[in-house]
Length: 131
Image (cartoon, rainbow, N blue to C red; front, side, top):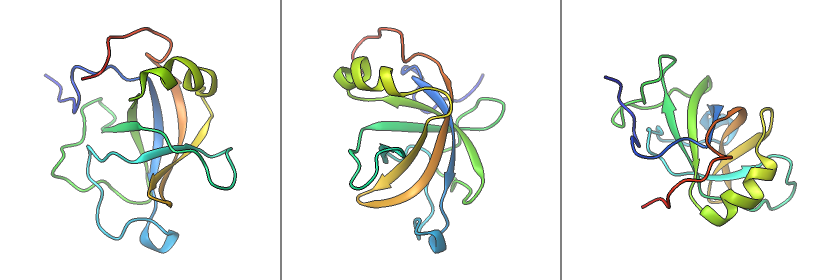
């Protein structure tokens, strides 16, 4: 049986995310699975709009990373991502999220990780509201 961080929440898309090292402006303390960074489209220059799109980091075989283990810095990690805001999910994000779209993960104004969408999964499907 596989472990999923959010077993009742389907992914909207998958991506590769690289957590930045402190010398790149990233976090000084380790990130762990379950972190709820803000998401910004890399194409939005200047002060980007931030969105609640949360990652579930996964091993290659599909199991989620354990929440007590630090995530590796500087290497691409697989993740399933979920758009939290249903209104933005059905409109803006369905229009913008495609394979190849690059994004940043923020903690406040600081970019702490960079990513690229690899596959759209459940984004185009209707789903019950998240609780």
